[in-house]
Length: 284
Image (cartoon, rainbow, N blue to C red):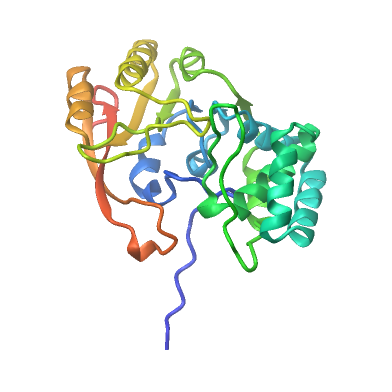
């Protein structure tokens, strides 16, 4: 007889998100303890801010649809959930999915409608891959799910957790510049690829995050550290990244993670990522 899985102690995001940090929460959450405010310049699916347990948080991402969805669900929860549920009920299938995606890309929805559609697209597209082309069009194909999961419980959990949070859509540098004493800044940027690997080098909007951007991120992180903030950055285990962080006074911890886009978790290969922390503030 199959054993029932132990219930997770963590709040699950209502969105699927490639590169999400849900499975790394045991490694990351202890590093956030003892701070007054969380700042996330690259929020993504929200695993970190949903589980950080801090009273206030500044949550940012450069994906305007993601931030609009967070804001709309925070401010108009019942309306967004009702709209999204109706979409799930009426429009499962490739043809309706493609029609809704076309309207989404044509900008024919209000902010509230767009938030509900974003949730629908996320749960109906291939593997929850949120990707836009150079024209700003969402271009992920249909996921061929028989019965896509409607994340009601997860959205309700988000509503409960999001009190005291501020959401923004800015360049990460503008958000890090707001950090100071008492803040912990958790950065999960697009990863530097390993040799002969593609990695997660793109934002969802298609913009490439190059090595020059990795260095720029470290520059703003060090300035925030000088103002009294704790800085935590995740990235791949690429040697160039390790050298960059070590040269700028970070301690590095390796963590084993599952990698890849396979729909079966057992098929995903494992890789060594890193968590870099300012060693003067958090000893390992």
